Length: 88
Image (tube, rainbow, N blue to C red; front, side, top):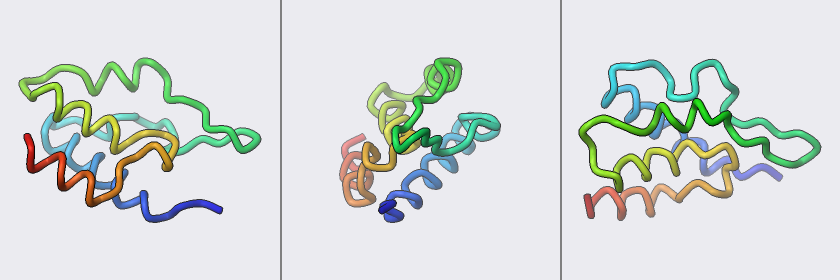
């Protein structure tokens, strides 16, 4: 069964990325979650690279990347996002 509690985390990650970079969705037209035979397929390397850079601390970039992970179970909870954001 899919854990739909992580969808808002993904959406917030996309929103933050777009606000901070003035760019579109960090993963372009790549689907938010790709499952092949029950296994999640990683995003292409180019998608990961687009999250790197800017004048933001590494901890912030890592938080954004964690929030838009392909596998919802690998994303932090909203409580963890809040906790990590407060430490920035």
